[in-house]
Amino acid sequence: MKSVITLAIESSCDETSVAVVRDGRQVLSNIISTQMDEHKKFGGVVPEVASRRHIENIQGVVQESLDEAGVKFSDIDIVGVTYGAGLVGALLVGLSTAKAISFALGVPLVGVNHIEGHICANFIAHKELEPPFACLVVSGGHTHMVEVRGYGDYNVLGMTRDDAAGEAFDKLARAIGLGYPGGSKIDRAAKLGDKEAIDFPRAYLEKGSYDFSFSGLKSAALNYLNSKKMKKEEISIEDVSASYQEAIVDVLAERSIRACIEKGYKTLAIAGGVAANSRLRERLEGDAKAHGIQVKYPPIELCTDNAAMIGCAAYYDYIGGRVSSLDLNAVPGLRIGERE
Ligand code: KG4
Ligand code: ZN
Image 1 (cartoon, rainbow, N blue to C red):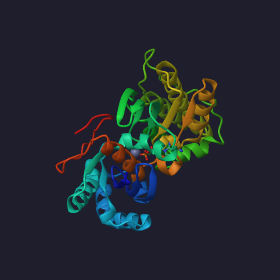
Image 2: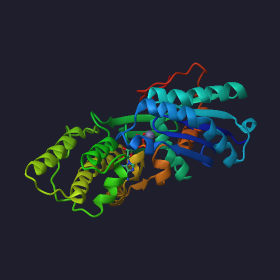
Image 3: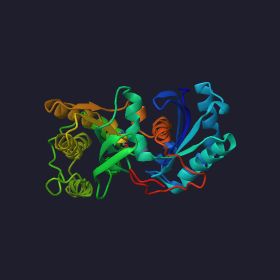
Image 4: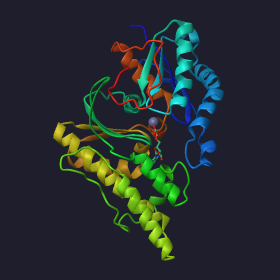
């Protein structure tokens, strides 16, 4: 069978990324143009600024991606693009570009769910990985416990009721002056701290639930910081980071391992920006091993936003017959498994 060359575009947040992927799992190029430095000074992503930068960057990134892959527009078989979830203005830039390319080349357009893209990063990193397996999706905007029953077939067991795990990391980082984005900085500071120094709360919710809640932890941390400040006591950034990270990791690990045991999965994948967290990886590997479960995660550059994962998801959607029409719109609150 002739191979399928996918041109994939991701612009849901502050990364303009374009990739060329062969047959879903072979990445020929994955160009990521980050706007992080620009948003840093505001302490978070400014949606209007993100949209404008995507417009300025997108054409150059498409060309760079094609050049690096050594393919021409005429080699492209399908165009995959993130159409949700994400910032609407940012999504529209990638979506309009993808539609234009698909229309001009006369090739199918495949709208991809960003969260499903994060899960698919594992297919690129682990060539032998096949569904079914359980997947913990933890990013700046999402925290989901998912059953991957087949390609493009997802069942959500639970999700966050308030803040996402990445958001919780980012909020603490801002409060202790580590800046944006905070996850990797807390990860680094925590290595030098004592994870038992402060007893932060863990929200396990009702028995048997796979949902998450991180807003109580965030409030507890802010209260802790305020009371230390009032008493003019010194704060150990390392200890706060380590204790806070441990509170997040404890809950993520409990949900993930329980999902595998209760639903009978022998493989647990993790996905999204927080899957880059070194303590989460270490903890899950340890807990999983004790139960005969294998843990899979993508390399760091495939954990955070990138178009290669979108190309992989687009390929499996395409071969599963799920293609989009040119009137596809951006859906900022798109959920896993939902189709337009
Ligand atoms: O998946 P992603 O790039 O964007 C979304 O789709 O949201 O995730 C970004 C999130 C940010 O909240 C960032 O702080 C977090 O991932 N993150 C980390 C680490 N690296 C990135 N969180 C914890 N530890 C890390 N090493
Ligand atoms: Zn993401």
